[in-house]
Length: 477
Ligand code: FAD
Ligand code: SF4
Ligand code: SF4
Image (tube, rainbow, N blue to C red; front, side, top):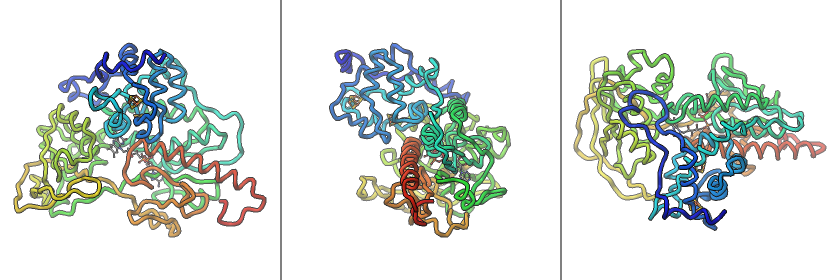
């Protein structure tokens, strides 16, 4: 009932309970508890049911947020789940790790005076309830279409595409070079943000839906890799969702010293038995993390949990101009991470092993067209003592056309795959692409959107091919 809504004056904003920082520092469990049902209803009822919901406008999936908030307020959770899962393939994941302060919640109209509706936490609550109640079932197709699709990469883009195509009746094969699916959901984002059991639960549902996983199978390059050309011959269409994995390099003397490492191998090792390896653990060490994005925050918080003696982030801009989610910065600070602003690495010092990082102090310059302030070097340098330095300066696309010997696969000036006016289709007919490999390092929610969009583009492409009596070469794969 609509009169139950608009309760933002009566109920103040409450987030789900966050475990104490002291407790969080000791384990890798998720830091937020879920909402209890009374709290979820109260919080959902704060929504003012806007005619033009800016929350929806700023959700990359266009989630019909006010509608499912109303249903949640009324206790109609099965309907709320049905509606939310229409637009989001993995709402339990987005509810946990979307940077809501920059997306839906950051644009909620009650935000300025009363603090936003806690949209992400309610989305998580609705979906977790649906799992508990058994409402989340594999979307098996009513009939088989008799065409098959090959998907390269099982991150959120690949999985969202696979789920949608399989539900429509296509035979779907996912090729993944790792031993488990999930991409960065499984091998990048730490468990204190996203419990790996949540990812595995989805994996089992996708298998039950009939998606065929070829795990430990690389495409294009690497040992035992299948050539893209072979995949194109085996399938009616191919979707490339390989993500971006080439770490941006720090170009400074001493970068090759022991214990100067890249973020992703460090994070991946921390989630496996390798975490006990002396060179890969931060235990007892003074750790300096270079960078100011989500990956840097995850490295700091991982080092803290491993028992580091001290964890400092050195970033070249100030707090207001850093790319990481505000909430994640706050979480890191609560757990004991320190920030040193306006510093850029100049050299790594040490004899065999790193002992310090030399950093140049920066100052803020003029703002660019996005409002972000440029930085320029000053004359000042200073050294920060370090036993371990983690470089988290972002990721770029690997040069796929060269690595895969596919010179006709067009890329942008950033090295990401170029998709043309025909939606998600690359320069190779019948080969589609989406997620980070097209956008550059981005967000899970955008990868899901691309996976869903590419699935629709593939279906359109294949139905156009099947009605065309004599498809001309280059029109249909
Ligand atoms: P990926 O998730 O990278 O998946 C690509 C998959 O393709 C991988 O499984 C890879 O093994 C596979 N693959 C690559 N090449 C081949 C090949 N040749 N053959 C076979 N398989 C191949 N986003 C958020 O929204 N919230 C966060 O909190 C957040 N935290 C992050 C923390 C870290 C440390 C990092 C690195 C990123 C984070 N992101 C976060 C970003 C987010 O994880 C990515 O934007 C998202 O995973 C991209 O999805 P994708 O499917 O395009 O690629
Ligand atoms: Fe907000 Fe992300 Fe959910 Fe969209 S998918 S409503 S941006 S938490
Ligand atoms: Fe509700 Fe906020 Fe969205 Fe308006 S912007 S519909 S108040 S959640």
